[in-house]
Amino acid sequence: MIKDKLSPRMEDYLETISFIEEKKEVARVGEIADALGVKSSSVNVMLKILSGKGLLVYEKYGYIKLTKAGREIAEKIKERHHFLNKFLVKYLGISPDIAAIDACGLEHSLSKETFVQFKKFVSFLEEDKDHQNINIHKEIEEYSNKK
Image (cartoon, rainbow, N blue to C red; front, top):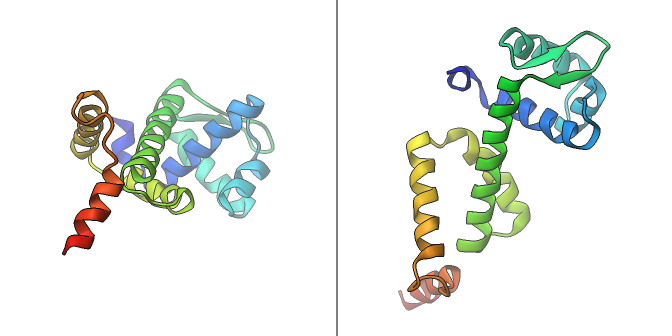
């Protein structure tokens, strides 16, 4: 699978291009550079690499568009990011700003197996009648204060 060969930075590019495409249908080098806080020359280098992997269509000085394979990977990355961000905020009480940063790091480093278990755990909490109204963050704090 292509994703296994992608670095976290490559995944960030795909995710960023996907967000830009949602707003504008296509992306440009300058928009990607601004979004990632890098130079246009760095973007061009990465676009060549990702294009070579068949993840986007790119012509120098032209528009950038994800291929079907690139879009599928970007959507999985965005799903992981959204899920992890929600988990950190809702269940651990992490501030949204910190959670966004930490979710970005976690989305690249968690194994597929761990991510699947995270999803099962949250489904258990959200679907089990005994846990639907539990405030885990509050309970953790109360538990920690007892020690």
